[in-house]
Image (cartoon, rainbow, N blue to C red):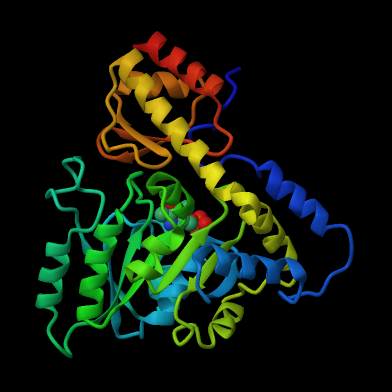
Amino acid sequence: MTVERHEFASDNATGICPEAWAALQEANADYAPSYGEDRWTARVCDRIREIFETDCDVYFVFTGTAANALALAQVCKPFQSVICHQHSHIQTDECGAPEFFTGGSKLLLVGGANGSPQRVRPGTDKIDIAQVEALLARQNELHSHQPGAISISQATEFGTVYTREEIAAIADLVRAQQLFLHMDGARFANAIASLNCAPKAITWQAGVDVLSFGGTKNGAAAGELVIFFDKKISRDFDYRAKQAGQLGSKMRFLAAPWLGLLTGDVWVRNAQHANRMARRLACRLRKEAGIESVFPVEANAVFVSMDEQLAGGLHARGWRFYKFIEPDVYRLMCSWSTTEETISSLLADVVAIK
Ligand SMILES: *Cc1c(COP(=O)(O)O)cnc(C)c1O
């Protein structure tokens, strides 16, 4: 029987990292106040303010979908729209949660700079400002949704990273149009590891108003943060989160693993490791199997095109991974726990099948 191997399926297929696990265990030792009144929650919020070097407002939710949808609901009225990439997670993978929680907002989709995303090329992974401008110019007052926010993913769904300058350029447009800028940071850690910059440099300093900061893919069991960089915007968000069923009563078990990640910058080290493994995987696929990455490998994902024989052969040998773009582009994902041995094992199978 073939053993199923999920190592490259997603960065949420892996376990809880040792530091998060130890913190969870420590939080389990005794009784503690509920609903976020505990010391772990307070320390995570303080540590976030330290890491981002600003007095921001921090909230816990259970999933990235909840973080994104509730953040957008906070900055968008029901008659307003959210401009985002056509392959963004909020568009393709959240079952309409942003539309549902905003109570009527519409997602307005734009593509990448290099034309059709069906023809996969670098540049199709990030939103193209010219397309955003054209879209804004087309919005008829009163008869169409009023633009409310722009949402970008950092790192992107294609494993690339917006530079500080690219974010600032989008933020300029956001300010000029009096919109809000939301960042889906399910892989924010990987972006920080990739850019090697201070978290503030690509968030509030660059013009981001609200960040969904992901812990799950970085090494926690669950739990994402919604971070508001302007307290005027976060008003009554606690009620919004509670109404959506996102206020954990045993909050310390969401918070403690986060504390494990944020203490001693484990979150950055986990992401650096995942990114390094992705670069290693891409490099070995190129050198040992002649397979080129479709997108620049800037975070922890490697996208490659595989013919049916190769993809089918790998599946038959137990490897689990997803096709991301038709007809033949697949995603191989690395995480804090990816090892060189696993990469060697995959490569051996790739070479054997080819
Ligand atoms: C994983 C992911 C999320 C969060 O997904 P959930 O399954 O709701 O936790 C959000 N955005 C992006 C880009 C993701 O990859």
